[in-house]
Length: 262
Image (spheres, rainbow, N blue to C red):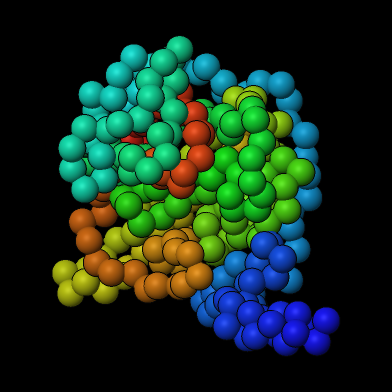
């Protein structure tokens, strides 16, 4: 018993400060907040049961670009280059773990994105190891995809979180295997000629008809266990989907520009 106790203490001393798989204690404080990145003490959002459908199966508007119609990945490429290796069948694409994330060949600025996803019916793992993926704008700003149904994890890593920054206002995920609909309004950051930030990025996120973020400011690129400042870029970029090792599915993906008032 004395040997086991000593070994346990040794392991604790060298292991990352991670609390029972649901949060960290050794990460930096998020700019403008009192919480640390993935703070283990940050309260989880309340659970809201969404209606059976909202925008599920919504056809693309006439001015939208269809990114995935259920037949092929012609408009996508593997992160780092090459053809995607994800599975396409029955009108959806499915992550093939270890094959790498994918992103659109086309780039977009301010946009309205519709995308539907389903986490695996067979539940494996817990916390961040369960149905994990992500929707990225410009390879920098992640809206989390996760099986958050009866699955405790850190608050800013819930489904619908602005990952590592803001938890969703509520947890409106459906049960494993059911289709969820995301409707996201993304406003890209803007920079002046000297590369100084003049306007941060914003995101409005609706999951299954339930508002998760209302034009919420994104305070820089989203990251795991870190908080990074903005770096100047064109304000345009691809839409990316993450390979986190889980066979998450996606379907009915379309995007349209926000336009301007006359």
